[in-house]
Length: 235
Image (cartoon, rainbow, N blue to C red):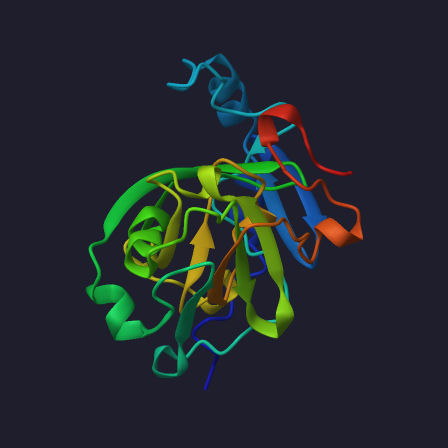
């Protein structure tokens, strides 16, 4: 039986030629990606965000859909899922999938920006906000960072005051459907303010702490902060 999570890695030839004619086709990581130049040009000319920054960060090009970016996959079974809220908290807690979904949750249309240079607009994610989870765990006043923990020891560090924006999510649903395995099922983080490596797939924990701790990519030469509008790609 075919794996229902396996992403489509090729385009039917006629569709590929039609799409490529309107943009730029690049083959990378075993997949063909279409950069929609018309969308990129429109985004560059669009109104600025509420914070005054352009919607499309510098050095980015728009693609037609959010792309999986690899990584060693975790267990996609919701029955096996556990999310630990721990560290500098008054109430350490472990949530299973049902308990996470029972928390107050919301849906946001978010833009995603990958350090490799692509952006995807208006991706719909449903999940629990970081402020809601921080409130549940009763994060201590001395906490200054949150370390996102994921399968196989992957981590990503974010300053707590930035992680507590209301549209930073722990999500299980994308574009109205269950999160695909290639995008981190059953649960991933989504932070639309930083490059997408700061939004770990196959999430397993949120560790709150008073000191910073560089994550998987940060210790390998990526920027510790990762603001797309400042092009903070590498250290």
